[in-house]
Amino acid sequence: MALLLAGCLSPVRTLPTPTPWPTPTVSARTLYAVERATLTDEVQFNGEVAPLVWQPLSFRTQGTLGAIHKLEGDTVAAGDLLAELEMPDLTEALQQAQVVLEQAQDNQLENERRRSFALQKAELELRKAEILLETVRRGGDQTAIQIQEIGVQLAQLAVEEQKAAIDPAQQRAITQAQLEIEALQRQIDERRLVAPFDGVVIAVGIDLQGIRSTGTRPQPHTPIPAYTPLLVVAQLQPLLVVATKDTQRIAELTVGQQVTITHYLARDQPFGGEISALPALNSSGAKQPGFQDFLQIAIAPQHPPLKIGDFVQVRLLLAVHADTLVLPDGAVRRFAGRTFVITQDGERERRIDIKTGLETGGQVEVLEGVQEGDLVIGP
Image 1 (cartoon, helix red, strand yellow):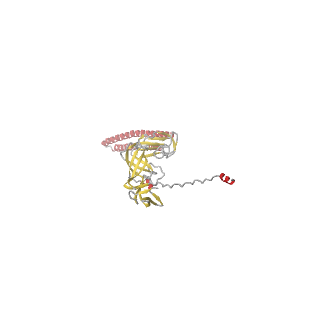
Image 2: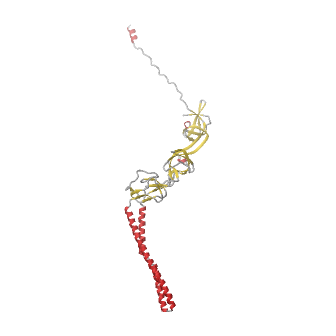
Image 3: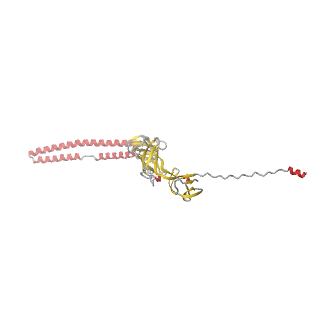
């Protein structure tokens, strides 16, 4: 009885619930059909409107800024004074040299006047002697004739003397004063900037790079280094579009290609252009007024209003492949130097090498390997 009771009171063991096996799932495959379409390959990039003719201006000597007479946007005529350095000593010395020159010229003028009077008097004395000679010749007195002939010769010498009576010291004084003025004027010109041609000021600032103003505008008494561009003057016409040498796919561009340009304020008025120059292969570090390091595009005569510094969008059509076989880029596989696709052939899969052509906009042109309507398995 005790054994029976103990067996009844022992705990009941239950078997663990078995873990169910996951049901296999078939991953969804993406199938792409080989289709015919038209592929267009084009390049788009931003450009900037720039002048064809422009020139940075710098002083030929260092100094402190006196004044800037023309600012960005001001129109100028050739020879207009644009800016100058402080140079009170030079301007005062130039004024004094001009006074010295005027005095020397006045002295020469007075001497010329006196010489003119003396010459006229000598010529009258010569005429008088010639008349007296004619008179004594009619009288027949040989002695009187000889004496009067000598008088005529003396009068002729007096005329020649007056003609040659030029004071070399006065001429030297004038020449010296003129040389002094020219030397001072050269020093002043080195401290002045003048417009080289008719145009407009497009940039002002110390050590300008290109055609844009940089930093704050220099104020009077600011030290200015020599040969450092301070202003840029440009002609308003003709204009061109420039783009940096880092422009996307620039290696595929050539001179003479036609482009379409769109101004950001006139998107409904696109206009034409033509690539006129490519960036220089070996550009030097020397500053020079041009865009040797830029892609340059000549603008068609008919275009919406443009001004220097405007940004535009440039579009260039490189190729159009019409009615060609295409696949999405995701359907084409590349591995170990091979380009291939995997096609669905009934229950079987086949790996087929293909030859591709134009690739643009996520589409790949297939030249060889598949036919229109073939189904290609995506990755």
